[in-house]
Image 1: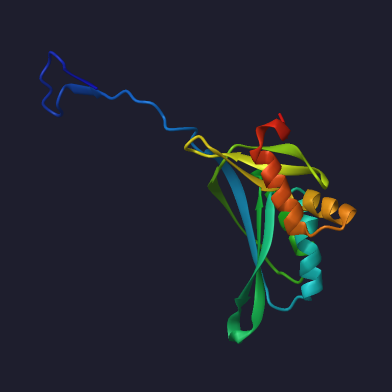
Image 2 (image 1 turned 60 degrees about the vertical axis):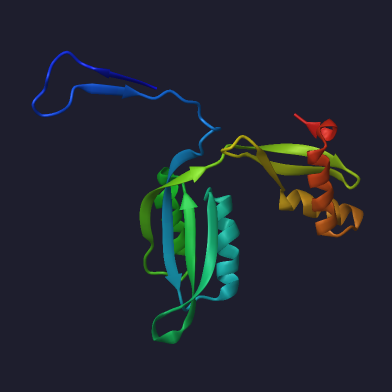
Length: 180
């Protein structure tokens, strides 16, 4: 830390500078602008909505989900929430409007904090399994098995999904088995 005073006296403010030098504890989460699209559905066939979420992901949405809610007049309904790159918002909103009974889609631009991540592959007794590995702000890492990869290995070997997922995490924690 250092402090210094200038040679002039300024009437509107002190002429002082303070400098602090330090080190970051680890990588800070990244920031990205995203579009958040929302619509309320109270008269839609749940099967149609169930097909809409994976279709939106396939069309480029970063994430899509439905949240059960109570609509006006006490009717059960769903809130459809889609997260997308801002440049994809208009196209995805048009898709939402074309694929269900919604009459409008709310859109807003927000910032989200994101961890750096990568896909790694580990060899398990059930075959190769992919994991998503995130770098944490304090410098550590966290891994989570990719569900579709775990499911495929479980189906191939006839073992429970949970068992395959646990084997993948165990293999990831043992550095000799990691493919980097």
